Image (cartoon, rainbow, N blue to C red; front, side, top):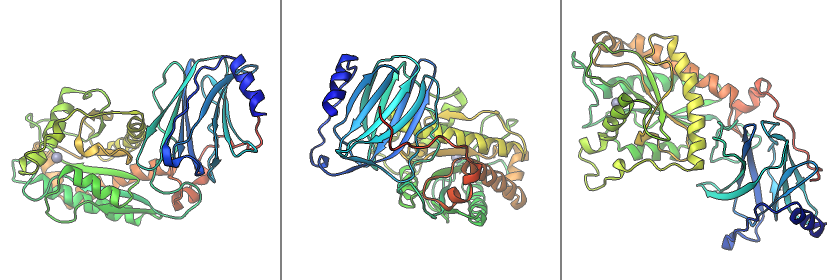
Length: 405
Ligand SMILES: [Zn+2]
């Protein structure tokens, strides 16, 4: 059976034969935990998240044209579903072979070259299969979490990060309002609303006037197993007439505007301004992006869009588009993250709003509403939210375990 398939594979032209030895992980059973597809009319990217690396074989077959990946000694985790058809990919299916090999088949509209590569991540191993022309990975349907996928009733955890603190006051308004105080007030109000949401729970990175390095904020979100990281700010800008909210995600290639780049540089300087890490220039390093982080940014951007449109309901939005820049605080490699500039403390009217408990509550309501809307459509695996909002999800096609190539 296997030999026949190999002959067939070579006859059809083996386009890539990936085999990677990963030492001690060989021989122990691996689990395929998630499969994501993003495709266009001339290319596709299939992302396979495994519990560990495995020797894999990639080959293509004809009639119909398809790309096949064999993962020896691998099984499919409970609840993993095949992505539905998209672009050049007409079907993705799984097949468990008698020898314990898990076969993943992507059926194509036409023959295309394929290659594969491993991307190590913190929780397991990710195999990325590129078919035809490269495709920018779309936002995955589920947020990656450190928890096993499948059924479960854990809460969706949101890390709420009040910007600045301690010896770093952040921006200061003309009326003397300090950014670090309003970010803490809004963060607390937001955490209350998240906690009031069934199936959601907030974790504050700081709940007092405390200086935290940017990376410590990410570390605390990790320690809490957060599904999302929200950094709350209210910065100033030289032009005091500028007003309105903005939402930022990490940039892939430079900032979306000069103003966004300038803001990111200022936020990144928070560590230095407070005297920490003077000998460590890591905050000034360029942001390194790989496929895994690219995917996290995609998730961040779709969540940020929901928050953005919720903020539009509260008042003015400065730019009706999610902005991008190289914020260090958004650099988590596995937690989707966004930075929200609720309003400009440099604008006298907005400074008054930021001081008002009623207005702080309105910001918190809007952000919580945006998050609820995002997680209703994209509930992470293993959460009560997923069980309760299953009905609102569009079926993405089922896994056919009996599938043959
Ligand atoms: Zn700030």
